[in-house]
Length: 364
Image (cartoon, rainbow, N blue to C red; front, side):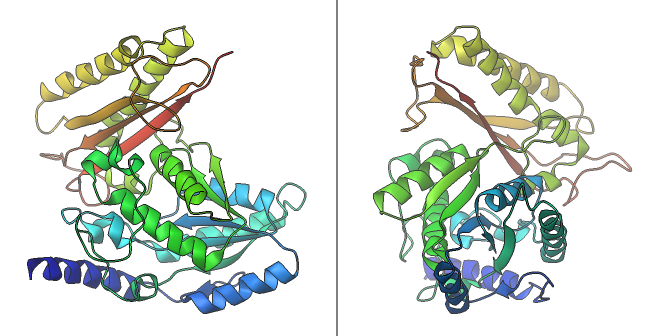
């Protein structure tokens, strides 16, 4: 009974989120809420030998998403963008309702981008042709979406990749990602789909899924979009505020230090990750020594040096293959805030998980 209640609660939260969407139709592209009409549009485009680039998102669009759409417009005649907060990639102890939902501002950004693309005909001939914003009843038509590890439903699992790194802390996350991506790919049947390098494990899993299930879509990976200070763009960054954002930059600095060790000729795990761990441990100690009104506590979930295809941890990097450097920090809620302090959306009370990665290229 408790499992059913939790599944129902997850489904109810998702349906409420669906209902909160404004159905305002933008002027330059239609919004589709069901599968049949977007498939009809796709067939019409196929008959005209037009190509579709697809950018799946959960909304709360930022410059990282925009860079994906720009790349899709450079390589396709038409761009489809999906906006759907997928409940099955949130664990039962993760707050689905806290994920930022910014439908109106998302539509405004896409309208502005489409006008920009219209002025860049030579560089980017494509345009945003459709927005796919399905409800959870459309995406999960037979059962309420489950976030339990042993939850019932039709799921896509890519193992052992989904059990590593992020998957060790979030056991249902990549099951939910692979499942919703398979559903979206089946609905849209794009020629190419675009993901950001920031979610490196996701890109490896989606590539494996497409290959193993014979999906006729090319997976294109676009470099990580970063703010001027180096922070990787993420929809969750709005929760950081100034203090946690400043300390959260430690993750990127740690990975850069490890990258520099590799560039200097180091190939052993201890020699590459040693500088990253030294930086992380120093900042952790510094923050713990500060008062509650000054510090931003965090925990390093992992700092990884892995094979670029299998994500197996490496003791020694094969220079002919290179490796993936990645890490995840758990930024704790602020203990106390100061008057007038920018604590971010949620007043600093929302925990934030930061992930980032750098690719160590092969060396001849």
